[in-house]
Image 1 (cartoon, helix red, strand yellow):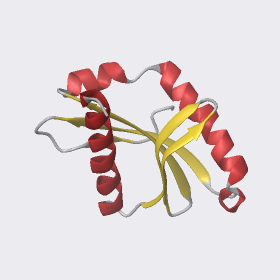
Image 2 (cartoon, helix red, strand yellow):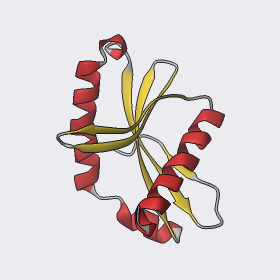
Image 3 (cartoon, helix red, strand yellow):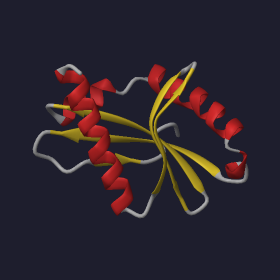
Image 4 (tube, helix red, strand yellow):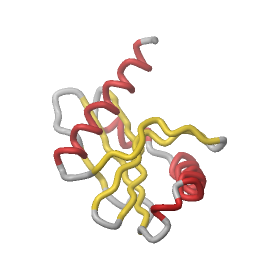
Amino acid sequence: MNRTECKGYFGELIATLWLFCKGYRILARRFKTPYGEIDIIAKKRNIVVFVEVKARNSMDKCFIAITPKQLHRIQNASEIFMSIKKQFANCDRRYDVILIANASLPMHIENVTN
């Protein structure tokens, strides 16, 4: 694993713990689909949340790393998850981003597609 992959994996671990502490139940990590990978899938109440994690040296770099193409990829990948996991068919969906920068608390941005 190279340095960038290691930083990404560590960022995803921090984001997972952050969500857990906020009352989310983690359903999957690094869920792979033909459209790409979803970093974290979590559930709180009746909402299944698909989370993209960005870990960079600064919050500015985190914000720059979020692209409409990535968000569209996550939405497509979420369709596959929902088609496989029928038990969540009646749940609402949400797309979030968690930004992790050095020496900062994670920033959880909810509902990034609206």
